[in-house]
Image (cartoon, rainbow, N blue to C red; front, side, top):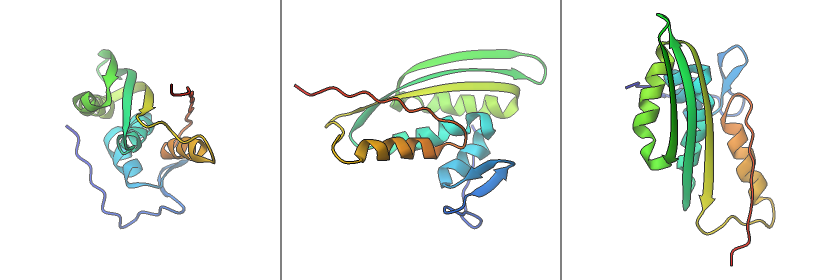
Amino acid sequence: MGVAAFDGENADPLNGRQLAPGILARTPWGEIAWALAGQEGNDAFVILAYVCQLPETKTTVSWQGNCQTVAGSHLEFEYEGDLNDLGPVKDFWAAQMRAASEKELHATYAIEFFKGLELAGNTPEQVTERLCRQGVGAAHVQASASIAT
C-alpha cells in the first residue's frame, strides 16, 4: 500500500505548484495522487477524490489498465463497479504503477445525482469545470440528462 502526505508548506492553490515539467498541482489531492501514482495515474486518482466528495450521488467506475515491469512482466486489469468497492483496487494499482516501467490507465466515472442536477443557471457547467480542473492532463466530460417522471 502506498502512503503519501501533504503538509501544505509549499502549496500554491492560486498558481499551482510544479511537480514536474508542465505538471502543476493546485489541490492537496493532486499532490497526493502524484506522490502515489505519478503522472499516468494522477488524473484518475485526483478526479476520484473529487467524485468521492459529491453529495447524494451514485458513481459507477470503469477502469482499464495495463503495465509492464522493469523485468518485462505484464499485467492487464479491468474493474467495473461501485465507487465504494474501488479502494482495494486503487491501492493495488497505485503500487503497480509506481513500480512499472510502462503504464496506462483509462478511467470512466458515471455519476448519478439522486435528486437530479439543477439544469437552470450554470450548475452543470460548474460541475463539468470542476471535474476537468482536477486533473493535470486532458479530461473529457460527457453529460446526459433525462426528465424525471
